[in-house]
Length: 211
Image (tube, rainbow, N blue to C red; front, side, top):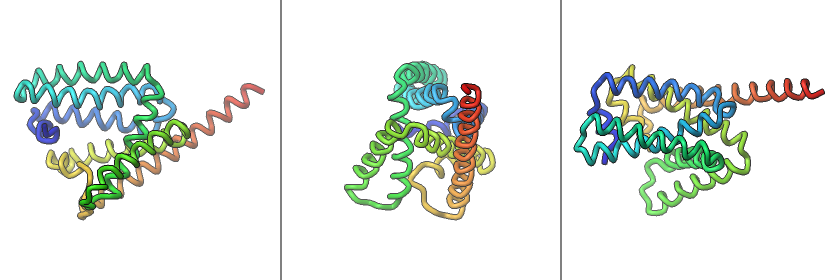
């Protein structure tokens, strides 16, 4: 099942709506990730479970649009509810995704048998760090993930549907991919800084109110 091919086969209006929604969710992740953590975790569960369910439904129904949409919604709702009530599992998953994303791009182009295990190891380490250092790791993970969704979505509208395969990791550092990575890095840094600053201000207000 090739989820990128299936996405490209969706009607243009449906695909544009999905990408626009991803940009909105990515903005929430990037700038308000930790402050809206339970919502972020629920949305993460919706996106992960929904995409898997939609891909499975598309495969079973041979690409039928209605079946794909219904399967995606049903799986997404189930995933959102699961992670919303399993808070720690959601935190671990956020750290895991950040670790896997970093591992995939650090080891881009390494064609060795151990590279898959190395990426998995980095992902698990990210998940464990997320549990041990929840606030900073979740802040960095949501800023990075949200920035990537925003940059990828905007580039989709600028460069067109082929962008869906360009942004699939691991990336090759051509000129286009280099610009995307630079934009992602700047936006992720800005999102993380804003999250840290707003959290400090909120903590200071709470401390002042308790005096």
